[in-house]
Length: 79
Image (cartoon, rainbow, N blue to C red; front, side, top):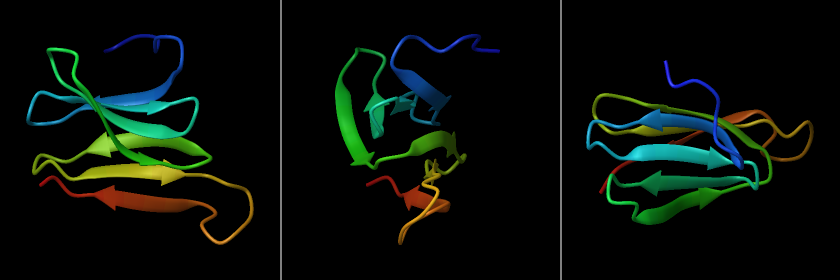
């Protein structure tokens, strides 16, 4: 169990590559290596959750209450 999220983090999950995927309260999806290197994978207005599959696929949820992309699950594939 990871416990409470640090300030500015809405959700997080670890991938098979050892990197942590983080959804921030500012709507960014980040990949953070063990060394602290940060890569922005995506951004959106209302990103709320993240799950990483064993193959490295990262699924993240956008929960806008209205608009074209309201309530969608997005996929980020590694590589």
